Length: 289
Image (cartoon, rainbow, N blue to C red; front, top):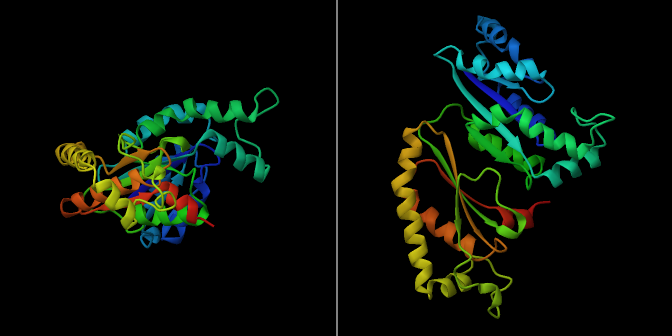
């Protein structure tokens, strides 16, 4: 049996993730008191639950602080034959504030003495133990409901998989570093196609930008060094029992240089990585409904 513990800050999309897993055949429980997790697992071992793909539970700041403090010990003492993963969702503070403002829902930690902004910050410390032990962190800042469901399906939809999942993601520094980045490389040192006539509105996937960047030797040198680093250290991540690694490559706007470098790095790693994916954060933002 597989157990997925979903956590994260309020407004980050936990309900959407739980609904997606329910649609995939998981037995799902929202806002489970952490101390009841062992009893739930014992109950679900009975034959009438054998048809479910696994169990997904949402445990977050709505729990009592006492139960959250005990959660580490609870997870450490799970049955040895149970495959478990912790999924942690988060988003930028401004995005969380906007989502609460739009839905007009009350934050679970806010009250007459604590503002929404203060509640959002307080949640970071309260959930630190869960975020620290998360197998997968997803930054939902730029994901709509449908994007998040697709991400959940891509990572968790088919049950346990062999190997480590590696995501190569391009981004723009001016919009912030991805919250889920494990390794960050900076492509801003390369010549910027933005200032070349005819290339400003293209992307790193277009032939004109590719030709421009490949005409500068430092582009190839940077890609070679990134690939060499990843080929050396990704196996170490795998040996340390990591299930997911996000390699983030940034430039100023996330449109030209980072996209080009990410595409090249992805192509170089593909023969050796069985679970390799690529995402262009700023290009996805432009095409989102």
